[in-house]
Length: 278
Image (cartoon, rainbow, N blue to C red):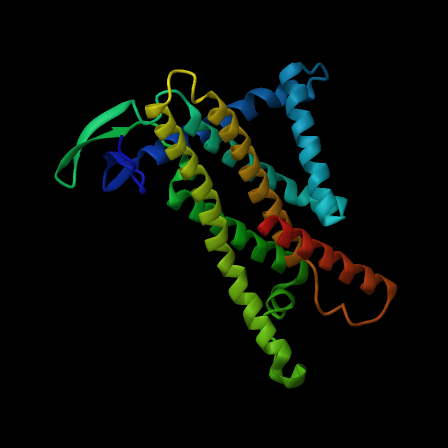
């Protein structure tokens, strides 16, 4: 049994090494695109089947969950395509690590002077490159939506507060700390997802080599649940980041009832993020 922290390359595409995680990720992506293309006509035909009903139920639950965070139907519908893509792509990427043959089907290659088995299957989420890429996309999406809703100067003005507009430079320092925390999310996002999925793969490999046939079944059920939870956590935290990014801080001190409601809403969102982050 060989445990590799990095995804193993299977072949070269020109000068680009194609790893087992990249290969599985491409397969998951293509499968989701094909499923969407095949299901779209059935969803608009007016005679939905069982599969279409399941997909519609998932979309409705996810949309209502997003709306529960944003408290704004329009924003929920605007964020839905990105959040739903994150959720489905991460979910099925996590679950590919549970397919039969994980760690046992592959090719033998010489790695660091030793002949080792390079498995064909590795969950994309068990590759740190994959999770970092998703985290960067989530953080940059928050900046994009922030600039879209508040304008370029309105969004970045929350982080770069002029010293003469802040008593004792408090706002200036707080803005800088918030800017650092925006990009620190990449680390927390990527390592949380990577650590849970990678640890699950190792657990299944160890139990499979020690336990008799059928002994891994409880752990498979557990990893199915973990894969679902991790996809949901990543998606909901992204929703929280997008919602906070599209809220203006300049309107909090005006003293109107609407401003107080906006401030209370932002506090609720940050509490929700803190609970999920913990």
